[in-house]
Image: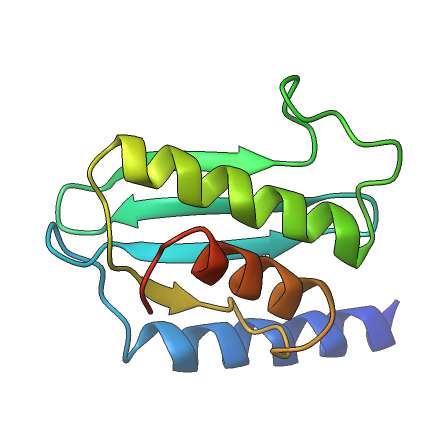
Length: 120
């Protein structure tokens, strides 16, 4: 139990350190990623208004994946998110990796979003 608390504490500290330097506004909203064991979620957020502009995940009914916890599923989420952001008129974002390493599923999602036309 103690080990899990220490691990979560370190993750929260990394997350706060990143968020201290990142702010998403109307011109460049923040693209944030949440990664669980089975799924991956991504949102484009305007921090000044405090609202989510666009969201995509492996739990969406439009792109239901058999396995949401792999790099292929993360790439699909990145492409769907980029398409939805383009429809909403968003071209440039600030990437928030949310304390996770930029590798694996997080990197696959970011690369797919870049291929979809988002600039960051």
